[in-house]
Length: 257
Image (cartoon, rainbow, N blue to C red; front, side):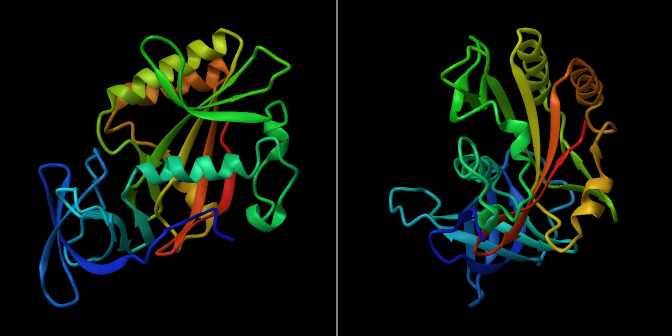
């Protein structure tokens, strides 16, 4: 059962090229060229395969400069979602159906580790941690001062046949988030980093888990900080959604520590 669904049907097109970071050219079924928005600030390394099947979403907003947005590409390992905000939307729906709720096996297919989040009964998104940082989610409970901070990272990089990794470019922002997650843990709060693997829909989850790693050859500082974060008690999870042109479901949730 889908946790997050597209509210309108995606249009199937052919991917041509990406440029100026947020612009993508595609060709529709009638051969017309369309320029669409790309909500992804990363390099999208390993994803930009010319003439691959792509899926775009109509914003239905006449005020937008680019009416459509790139959502999915169909690659050798299955669908890849290139709109990085979808990872956060998906985790928002995941928490909506789990935090403070009884087990819902129909929706979550018994894959969510409820026992790891029993201390929390409510959550908010985009919460200020300090003057420098906001985390994607903050979990809390009225009866305690302690909180749980969660940062979400969308993963789309494939390095080899059975290797998927994060990040796809040097990420100073990601490095800062790791430092702040360690600070939160030092202050007595819980800290989580969710890697959401937004590609590989045709690959078995165990293969994805075993093949996932940090791209140390791309960002060595991030790799070192992640190791420090593990040792400091920051919990690391790999979340594997099911991806399709209609929406997203939960396939597996792995604790990596």
